[in-house]
Length: 171
Length: 169
Image (cartoon, rainbow over all chains, first blue to last red; front, top):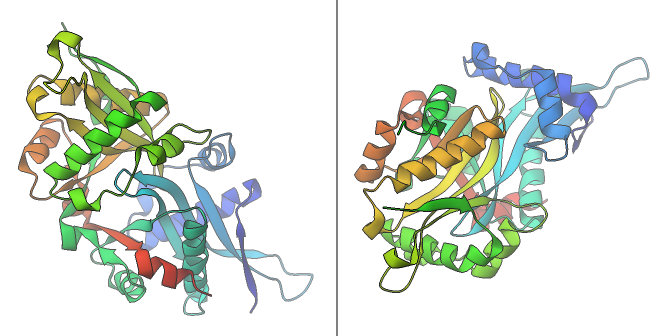
């Protein structure tokens, strides 16, 4: 089974959304995906992309078969004012039947190489603490758990809170 | 107290660097700061910036004893949620100690929220150290959620030798 990794293109948007939903289902959060293909197209392939994507594509065995996109990683660049640029891995997923074949490791290698070439000092990501297999996958590769080791916690303001905060108080 | 908030420009990098160091000192991590004024200039104010900044200024008559009129800042960048789309990440929020308690922090957050909404963002994310009670109290009073507690999300990092090793063929 041959596959290749490549940079996502606008035509990949339907597959990206399909895989985002598959990953959400795997995390029991399927009904939380609000993104549409239109959002992904505008946000990833406009003048100022909000994200980048690398795709894992299965090469067809013969001419009658379609190519099949069976994995992806979505990432963007962030900034740590102490050390500079970071690569943030937002989503990373391989369709179940293609796991255990080294594709995930290949994607991680590709992204780490990209991080180093773009002078990022680290690769950051978030993992749910009950996702043991992913935590082990990352820890085996030398990842540190900053929540556990340094006490960093992730906080969020949702849209309603954002609107409230953005409204100046009445005089 | 009178103050203004405006977008940071390249000439603010000296003060941003100063305040980054002050914030790192508050977080007991001054030795971890490796960034220089030059890095900030290149990374924040070239064609494709990696971050954006807003600065708080006070009038001359309120300047600090060292003569600083730039007394607070926020650093943020745009990120992406594969569930909800555009998001804004507030990386740093800092007000010099003698200017706290005057609504400046709130005004900075309000500005980041406005800028985020203007860019079509659905959420504002940030991290806080679990022992930083004054900051936690402030953020909770503004209506945030602890995502680490709610969803069990741990913030992880691959850096230094681990990153180099991972990049090896």
